[in-house]
Image (cartoon, rainbow, N blue to C red):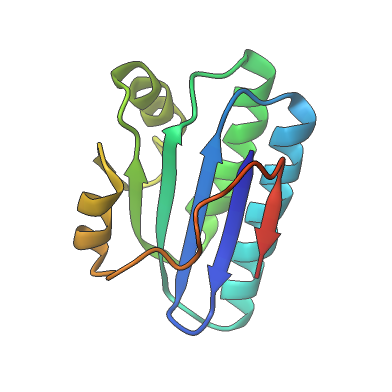
Amino acid sequence: MHHVHHDPTNGRIFIRACGFWQAEDARAFRDQVRAACKLAEMAGQRIAMLLDLVGYPPQANEVRRINREAVAILAAAPIDRHALVVPSALARAQVRRLMLSVESRFFVDVGAALGWLGWSELPVEPLSGVASSSGY
């Protein structure tokens, strides 16, 4: 499951990813990340991003390869602050390797990431059993 949300009013991108993915899930995610970043770029915004990977376990090689493409999109986007919530040490190590090109700050819980970003709340409600969703 994944959710990518661009909030143009507040200059934010919120991403949540969880569960084991197939390659098609990773491609859909990459395309949604591209669309959100393009909207932010077209609006001329500098943005902050929260990437919530609390329920996102280490993935298969093909998924990681496609996710590197999504990371390249994030690295090129006008994002000033990247907050990543990754509570598992193993997942954090995998994500750190993927995010080498992006200056980010890691957190073990969403509350700490929200505080660092200066957000009072998440811009969207948590996912509830949706296979994949996107809102812009």
